[in-house]
Amino acid sequence: MPRLSEVIAALENLWPAERAESWDAVGTVVGDPGRPVARVLFAVDPVQDVVDEAVKLGADLIVAHHPLYLRGTTTVAASTFKGRVVHALIKNDIALHVAHTNADKADPGVSDALAGALDLRVVRPLVPDPADPSGRRGIGRVCELDHPVSLREFAARAAERLPATAQGIRVAGDLDAEVRTVAVCGGSGDSLFDDVRAAGVDAYLTADLRHHPAGEAVAHTPLALLDAAHWATEWPWCELAAAQLDEISDRHGWDLRVHVSRTVTDPWTAHAASNPTTSSTGAPN
Image (cartoon, rainbow, N blue to C red; front, side, top):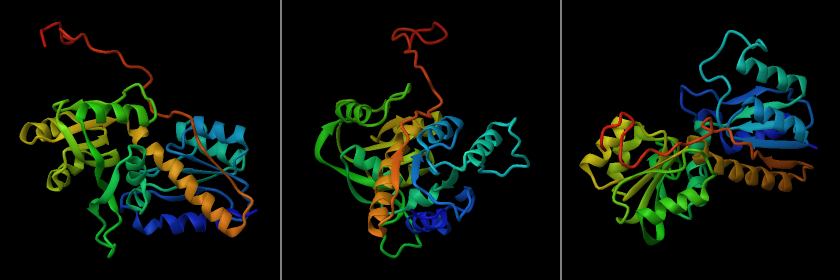
């Protein structure tokens, strides 16, 4: 059975902390390096529901994609949302390790897992990492489909393949338009529109698209947009990362069991469809 320090070293080899963005907060948040690790749970969000799942599972380590404390804090009091998480982790001897933008940039990384879930063939990074001479690492991915499909069909594929959420998949564009090339970015991706346009793709699938950037993107180009829930676009990475750690465990002969959280941590719980003939003010659409 490996020690936490050995497992963390393996994770750091997959996603070195120095490759994270300067504003990011990655690495080990809680944990005794000398404690043995028998079970690892991968999840997108280090929230209380995931910690409760880890306790029930008997996990010794949670590997999360999102940081617990991104902007620092002055308290870990259990009366606060995140402080309660810290107390629960320590009380139950569960370590927490975060791989965020360093996992986004990795080869393979978060967007590779998203592309794989959609049966897309990765061609290159959308925004290459200038520190990578091979040109394989970076944010987002430019992909191709084996066979062109309509935007309607591709949206249906995304809705079927990605984890179910209340939001589903929002679409902007001609539903009958042909889609051959797609840019994907797990997580919030509307800061990358210039790169998407430069890539010349037919469609862009990401999350958290805002009104103005999305409106500008479709007003001046034939680019189709698919906006999925943030959590849903990043969850496929958990399966990829778990498989990577499984392979490392086998190679080292570790007695390690690796799990993927099935807890839905997307914050939205319901969706009420709009009336197709009137807006929210009662005015005709």
